[in-house]
Image (cartoon, rainbow, N blue to C red; front, side, top):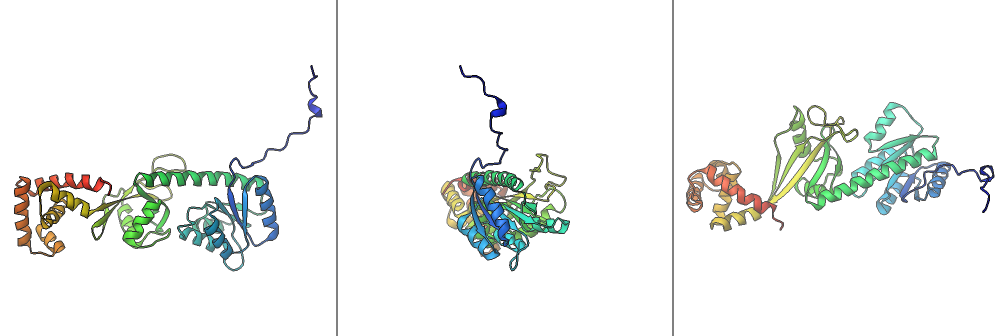
Amino acid sequence: MNPPEDPSALPPPRPATLAAVEAKVVLIVDDVPDNLSLLHDALDDAGHAVLVATDGPGALARARQAQPDIVLLDAMMPGMDGFEVARRLKADPATAAIPIVFMTAYTETDRVVQAYAAGGVDYVTKPIQPREVLARIAAHARHARAQAQAHLALDAFGHATAVLRPRDGRLVWQTALARELLAEFLGPHGDHAPAELCDWARRETAHGQPGQSLVLQRGPRRLTLQLHALPDAAVGEPAAAGGATPTGEWLVVATATDDAAQLEALAQAWRLTAREAEVLLWVARGKTNRDIADILGMSPRTVTKHMEHIFEKLGVETRTAAAGMALGIGARAAARPR
């Protein structure tokens, strides 16, 4: 039996390191070679894959091509500074979700605020402490991955969602489906809400809980947007008074429907003509005969005639009854995948 080893004869334990449990791709952007070397060595030792850029245009190109898990960005660089690089990264859908950690020698409040306003999630002060940087990379990359997985899950179930900050019009995040639908109905927008969406959100959130949806029509397709209060994600508490988080953020839920599918369902359910189905659809949406006449380009008398035929085919005597029956059929048609 071997004698127990003398603890004093054992090599000293290695200092605890923040080695990467899962390797990340990290893009370092700095125009100072010494800073690059220090960070590159620390990240490489921790098991991360390291990319380097020494100026703003190079950083933008590298980020778009390589899709790093996180960007370490020097705030003060000649030419395009770090703040402008961050703004451009966040404005590009291909790189908007990548978390940005600023590196700066400045600790003044104005500079810190500027970093967050440009899209940074965090900042570290120079001289850089590698262990601190590694800890922040681990935390932010983990959070970004969880958020990306949540967005994919929402899209997979057809929930187009975004988080909007009405006071400055910034879309803090948006799922791919939400981005696609907003672009279809309101045009390309990057990480800033289109004017129509932003104006509606500001009106609705100005005096507490919002109640009015925003409905956008493009041909046979319709997009309905609703605002919902968010919990305070930072502390897991309910939203502040008025429904927004302390940062003034609201959840936007977008639902797209196709009028063509609903018209087809209405026509088939009661053997309506195409015009009768259109009239009934707008009745179900609360429009008067005069409104429907303007929308469909016909006279109010013609609408009245269509309504007589609709009442007869549905076996009802009132607009309310007809609208109720149409809403049931229309909802099932809108929910059916096409």
